[in-house]
Length: 130
Image 1 (tube, helix red, strand yellow):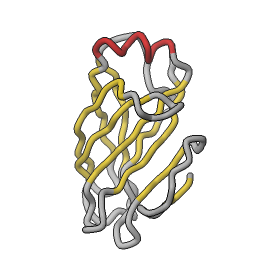
Image 2 (tube, rainbow, N blue to C red):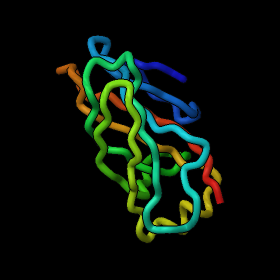
Image 3 (cartoon, helix red, strand yellow):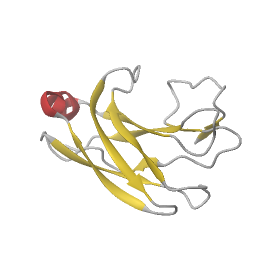
Image 4 (cartoon, rainbow, N blue to C red):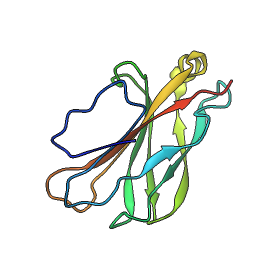
């Protein structure tokens, strides 16, 4: 996992990135072997918040393409306590078939944290299970 400061450039070819200001704690991140189980409208993703985090997390989890991370297939809000895990249901709608055909998706989390310098985030590339 690449751990980056807010000012660092994020490479597109890294499968796991955590970004936060130096005065903030670790961001939550998606986890699991499979990002999708079938071509359905709602997919369960999991978000976890490390014990090193300074506060509970509330933010958004977005499923995107892996090439540019610019095409959002679905987004959902989540809330996770420090050291905890939560299932996040992401409505995919018309994108369900595209995600079902993909081999991998990027799952992004974004939350405010405690820093005034900017939000913290993470990117995890997950395998799509058919």
